Image (tube, rainbow, N blue to C red; front, side, top):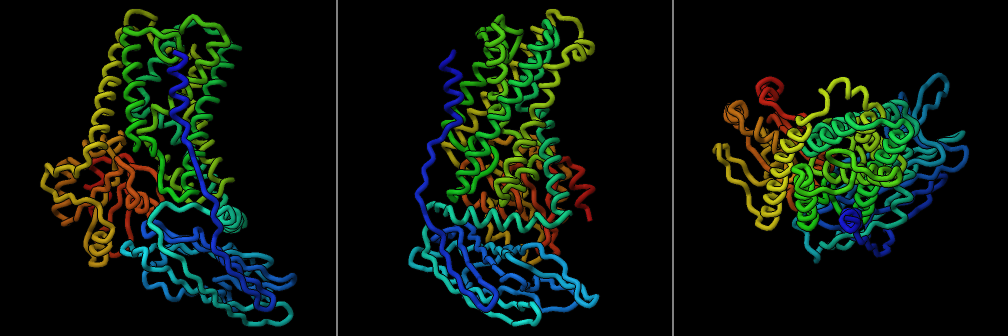
Length: 535
């Protein structure tokens, strides 16, 4: 059995290699202002976005105006030339500070400031092409007098369709830039606190999703009907929390490192691996045998507490937390998608606190059950045969999970677009088609889904296959696109990033009035289409 747990731990570990690469850098000094330009990669991949940062270093005693200078002043601007094959999707500026001169409020930058631009290349670019850019920057620098400044920073990057390695220099510069985007704004800090709260609540709700609720229910019942030792229970609750925390940190670190290497992945990425899915089939099958009492293993995860030493019980509590995160992989809870999506461009000092908050929320319900079993004991009937019956009943959904994972594995090996049984005209996701329809002011609905996403499958059954949804589609003449992320797909990862997410489910609706879109709740009901989107 020891080897079994080792196999689970090993499944978390990936061999990650990264070749060193230096970001393209260019600099120019014009009067009191020094400009430095940094690119995220040395090359451009047509299927990946490219970020560019311009750093402004302003001489002591001088300041330049921000992009929104206030009542008077010349705004600092960055214009891009020679970018016919690239779309500027997003730009960000450091948050400026106010200057009051003769009762006139102005806004600007002192010491340092950052500008970031995100470009989306044309996917038709080939290796024979080059990515040519030219940044034209204009500003007004003031001390006792004001001096206008202008600089042009041209650069070219080769096209490369392979994976890209992010430069260590980029990480340093981008973290400093991110700090300047958020640190001086109270509103931004409030938003960050709200995101942490959403991650915490999302972690709590994750316990009640279909992936894990039946299994943890059995464990909670087991705790309620066994001897209670205060010190031991506290230690076990702490070890369970530590196990959950360790699991989330491993997943978060793998995500972070892979994204630094240019991979576009998100929550549940491990389920895009047939090897991992096969391992999960084995794990869930063993769990079902344990619930049916066909296999008896001395681990304190399911059924009655095993007669083990305190040290063994603590170790088992840690492994329970570790395993529970694996089991929860296919699910995304409400609030959780938004919180994880917030980490897409977040620096490391924001990225990890969000995952820590998520892990603590996820660990909380079971830890409380471990600490206060008497409360649960007061709610549940006395121990009896019903506990064994309930265990066997809960073995059914676990066995069905094995069948479902086998279905996922089959679909990963035999990729095909799912048939449209309602004749609503579902199409495979195509960003070009979506953009064309939106530009023509036609309504579009996009379903970001995967066979391994339990929430997606439930939503599909309850809402997307409902008569209300069919009526909504036909009445509004909505064009439907399904973005299936069962297997790794760069175009879907890029689309999720565009909408500020890196997890599924995600439902996007363009109502036909322009480029503005609505993101629907992660838990769908038919009423969303009859009420929320009826206008």
